[in-house]
Length: 79
Image (cartoon, rainbow, N blue to C red; front, side, top):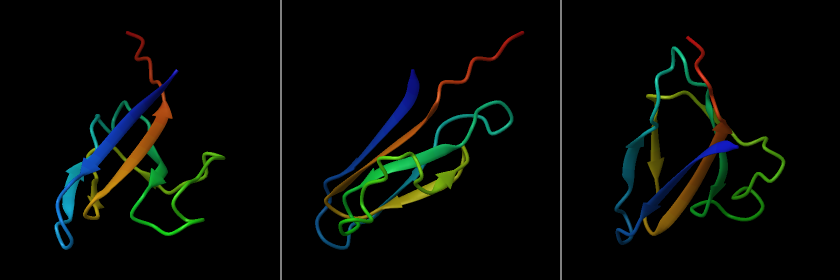
């Protein structure tokens, strides 16, 4: 199963929020944007898994009154 990350911003107009993407870039793979309701159709959804990528620890700015969904393949660290 993929890891999913959901971000919500209920602030009014002009109230962008910056989120830090979770994980350790040394062991976790990159996040890939699946949905951001701040963008206009058809650039708001990437159903084929071809959305922009972001590494763990990077920040993502989410517009006011919007939500974003990121996903990545579940990473299993073997020791």
